[in-house]
Image (cartoon, rainbow, N blue to C red; front, side, top):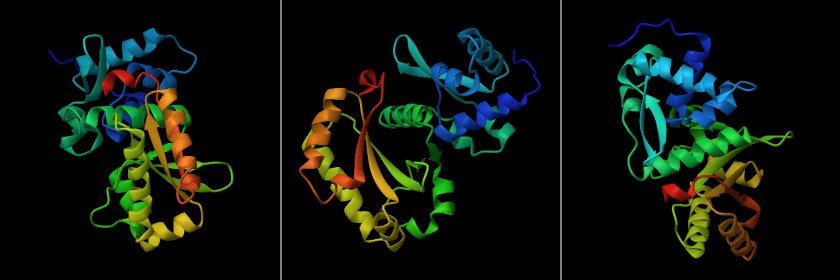
Length: 225
């Protein structure tokens, strides 16, 4: 039986957070919404939202890890597309997880596809993806970052993907202005530190892209690829 509850301010914030990333984890919620509180506070909130049919869980890395997503009822409650309640596919899941953990840890603002199209309309182009992008603020000037998730490809292939990502965007006036102003970059998200070192070494050999590409490690990502 579905329980009736009154959604509180934090409940709404959590649901919108899940809608933004298409998923979340208990660990991420603890870091973002329950600072200074124990894990029981997260468990209690998730149980309440599940019993009220606002969130449900799916396997992340069976058999012990799971992620949480919106239900159809939740999408109606916060006014977002019903499609956001669908479980993530086999390839989308590790990408979304890497983006979620990276942005929540680095305090970067992840942009939904709609936000990217609205805020960077001059960069929208046929054939180029409208996500995943985030905003990076280094304290001086904010920059747009394209997140390239490493799903296990070899180092050479990832470097070629970085070169292609920058090359394609240089042909778009909006992106070209950002690149020339050093306000656009590619951030590779990988699972292991040794892969990060290998990628950085390879990127340093390519003077055409080395200044516009960075590499970050996402913890607990190994089991998803």
